[in-house]
Amino acid sequence: MVRSLKNPKKAKRKNKGSKKADESSSSNAIPSMPAKVWQPGVDALEEGEELQCDPSAYNSLHAFHIGWPCLSFDVVRDSLGLVRTEFPHTIYCVTGTQANNAPNSIGIFKISNISGKRRELVPTKTSNADTDMDSDSSDSDEDEIENEGPKAPVFQVRKVFHEGCVNRIRAMAQQPHICATWGDTGHVQIWDFSSHLNALAEAETNVSKDASIVSTQTPLVKFTGHKDEGYAIDWSPLVPGRLVSGDCKNCIHLWEPISDSTWNVDSKPFVGHTGSVEDLQWSPTEPYVFASSSVDKTIAIWDARLGKSPATSFKAHNTDVNVISWNRLASCMLASGSDDGTFSIRDLRMVKEGDSVVAHFEYHKHPITSIEWSPHEASTLAVSSSDNQLTIWDLSLERDEEEEAEFKAKIQEEVHAPTDLPPQLLFVHQGQKDLKELHWHTQIPGMLISTAADGFNILMPSNIETNLPPANA
Image 1 (cartoon, rainbow, N blue to C red):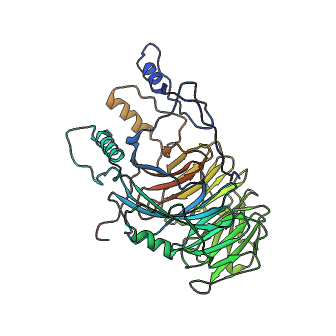
Image 2 (image 1 turned 45 degrees about the vertical axis):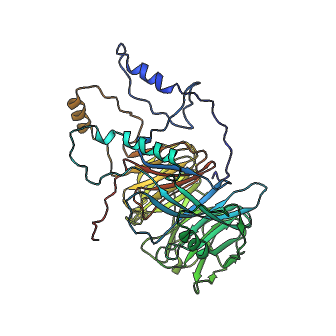
Image 3 (image 1 turned 135 degrees about the vertical axis):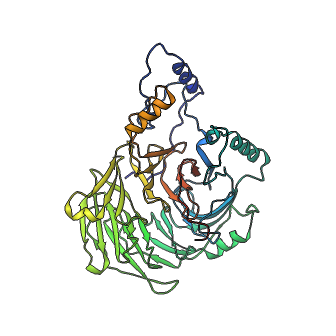
């Protein structure tokens, strides 16, 4: 699995790509061929070409960093509303640094005044047929934000010293101020960040003056029983405080809460993989069941009541299984991403029958670094890869040749849609280098946050539609 954060070389690029496209499209002498989709990491840009961001593709897009690169982060649940759709937005997150030859820290941060385009859930009737594609108003809003300064997002952070690099960090859903970290020192630690989160909440929109200050804090628990460092860790969504952590020596330990600040860690590990445990996911419906993925190419399903061996295990990919995600809206679905760039969707009800794969995609050509189901749409998931792409997929979509033919006949023009793109591919986000992790915001439908070697992005694609609950729900 590719884990280290690199400093990629910057390509020499100039703004000439759009001009070439215009010249080719204006020529009718030679019939045009189906469009070729440019893929980072696969196709090389020609000298003088560059890719440009289309702001109209986003309802919101912002970038920020906290100094050193961060391999992992998590969204912290807040009390600002379970389903928030109105701009500006406020978010809370925790992250950990990967600093070279410098002290590492955990960052607890708040970003407020996140602006964006407001979109009506039900489009109003208008005489302008191009209203949905018109980005003039959004462009002016962005210019206004950039020029006026105070309307830009406000970033506030509090930092806590962490011994060694932070391989992974996770906040407990039921008690968001409680966080767990996996360090490259081989230690798993649990922290109480309630004082920092309370200070950020009370700070309103004032920029933190102590952003460079790193405080010291004693963790609630420091577990030294793992034989090596690790990356796999997950809080139970059903039992507050229940945790599993897996290491590079193929061992998984179960944590059971004794109180709000103490845990009992089972010294006898779960053992079933023959290689490093890369990721862990609790079942969204069964309190004692969890899944694990490994560099041994397998996925294992465990039941903590049945001993220290997996209940079932199966080969999932031809290379390391880097990441997994258990669908919390359709609990029979498990997604997995591999080191060869492929990712698969499995129906766990069909595992015993031998062939549980219901979808398999080979779009990415470099390792999958993160995968996560949408918390609001059962058929939607997001994927990040070392090819510097964050992609969003809707598995409910299929190519409809009859609909395409009707569309071509209606506009009475030749349409050359790309043939090398899966119909389930909903959105492609680029611009970050060495993407490592992504998360949906569970309280803001359509919002994604991602971390990479060059910092964080907050994005809300304009074509992500979410069926929101009624106002009185």
